[in-house]
Amino acid sequence: MRRTSGKSLAMFIAAMVLWGTIGLFRRAIPLSSGLVACARGIIGAAFLALLTKARGRRLFHGIGWRKPLLLTLAGAVMGINWILLFEAYRFTSVSVATLCYYMEPTFLILASSLLLRERLTTRKALCAAASLLGMALVSGVLNSAPSQPGDWWGILLGLGAAVLYTGVVLLNKRTAGVDPYEKSVLQLTAAAGILLPYLLLTEDFTALSLTGEALGMLLVIGILHTGIAYALYFGSLDGLRAQTIAIFSYIDPVTALVLSALLLSERLSGAAILGALLILASAITSELEPPPSSKQQPSKRT
Image (cartoon, rainbow, N blue to C red; front, side):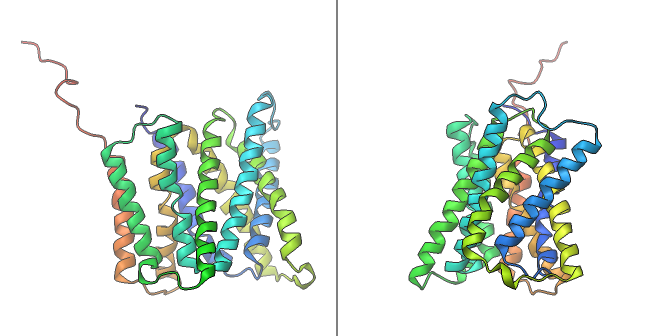
């Protein structure tokens, strides 16, 4: 079995931590989630395209047509994934929608064993189950149950978003060797393009207004939390097993939870703290290498 690359894991964790901080900046932007998502896609893609040019490299040079096509498809799927998640928030609570969305790691683990032929060990399966339980505790969904008919639509939309994001990861697994900046430019552009028709149907553009502070925060989200974070994220996927990607994805909500408590003085419940610890312990345990068996140890010479 291919071992996890330390550099790739560090890049992936960095992306998760960056995404976990996005809520601190999002609060200062008086725009809908759809508009923020579309804007960050455009800003992130433009930033990475300019950065690639500054490095003296040509975008999409010498990589043929198949991989760019797959990446464009992945970006379009990512855009639809965002739309389903936004709609899930409209029909049900944020905690329920978030938990449904974070079924994606579980779906990814199952898909990796079927489509990528990654062996699902008992330890990985238990760690995935523990992470999902931890996410349920963090979200607070165990304290409430769907009470309105619309809640079930929200649940289905959240689960649909999770399935689509699983597809994004699997498509990226088929584009190994492409520069992470190029991967990010294509996918972010495609995602923003998919969002535009949705926004034209759902947004009132005549009421838009941004202060200088809000515009600055939007640029930070577009450049740091989107351009750089997605470059780290997509650049890490080639060196990681899908099961590792799945379990370590929970670092994102744990980071958001901890920072909200430290910087925004949001009170943490005992269940949320337990859930965060369970997620982190599962992520670490999942990557511990088993001790070599006696059959693998070289025999001693006398």
